[in-house]
Image (cartoon, rainbow, N blue to C red):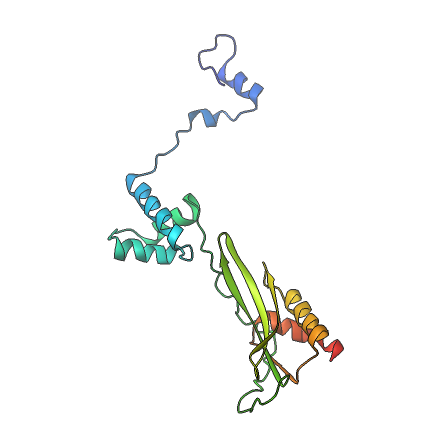
Amino acid sequence: MIDKGHTKLSIVKQCNLLELNRSSLYYKHSSTSTLNLNLMRHMDEHYLEHPYKGARRMHVWLTKDLGYKVSLNRVQNLYYRKMPLRSILPGPHTSKQNKEHKNFPYLLRGMAITRPNQVWATDITYIPMAKGFMYLIAVIDLSSRYVVHWSVSNSMEAEWCSSFIQETFDKHGHPEILNTDQGAQFKVMFLQRQFYQRM
C-alpha cells in the first residue's frame, strides 16, 4: 500500500492518508527459533491426544520423556501465549472454601441408612468435551442407589444448584436429610434457604 519511491507523496503523507502508524513500516517481525518451533509441534501433537494436560504437565513430558532441556517459563509462554492452548479440565480451587461461609455438621457419621427417602446425596462433577467441559449435578437416594434427578450445565453456579434442588423437591418430594459436600455452591444455596420453601 505504501509506495516508498513515490515522487509526489512522502511516506508521512501516505501514512496520514491511510491512517497508518509510520512505525509499523519499520517493524521487523522477530522469527521464532527452531527450538520453539519443534517444541510447539510436539506440544500440538501431544495436546490432541492429551487435551487435559496444562503447561506444567506438558513441561514434564517434554523434559522427561523427550529429553528437552527447557525451562517451565519457556513452555508456559509457548503454551499459553504463542499457541495458545488451554487444558480442558476446570481450573484450580473450584471447590475452595469461602472462609465467611459456615461449616455444616456431617450428619451421616454412624447412621444406619435403611429406607428410601431417608438420605439423599448430591454432588457435582465435570464431563470433558471436545472444546471445554460441562458440569453434571445429580441427586442419589443412598438407600437404594437410585438416581432421583440430574441436570447438566456449562457453568457451576449456586443459582443452578439451588434451582436444581428445588426442582428435585417439586418433582420427587424431599428426604429427611440432604447430604452435600462443603462446596461454595451448596453453601450459598443453604444460606439463601431457597429450597426450604417447600419442606
